[in-house]
Length: 124
Image 1 (spheres, rainbow, N blue to C red):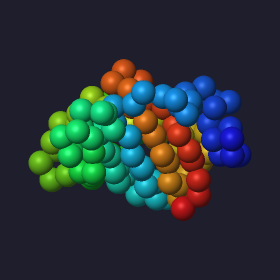
Image 2 (cartoon, rainbow, N blue to C red):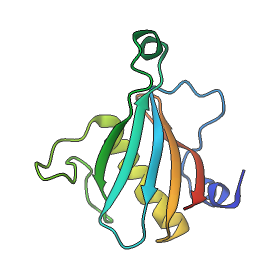
Image 3 (cartoon, helix red, strand yellow):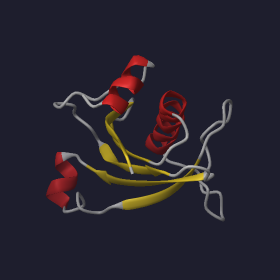
């Protein structure tokens, strides 16, 4: 594990094993001083691969959560409700910022439908 991922794991953030059966996975771009995180995701199930939807990348603008804020609305102009996996990603990103600090990061994550886990954390 790299240093940032190890630091997050020591703070109690779950790290995905290599054999994790994820439903959604992607990358989040965290920028210092911004109020919105850009989350890119795609469905990584076998059914999505068969249907040809595995390459469809969805980009969400997820609000940067404060200490007690709930992740139920997106950061777009319509305040669109976030899907459950995006709510879990927002909570993980808040925990990563607490562990690493407010720096520019690229965070790879995987969500199995119940739990969002880190795959890697690296500086942008």
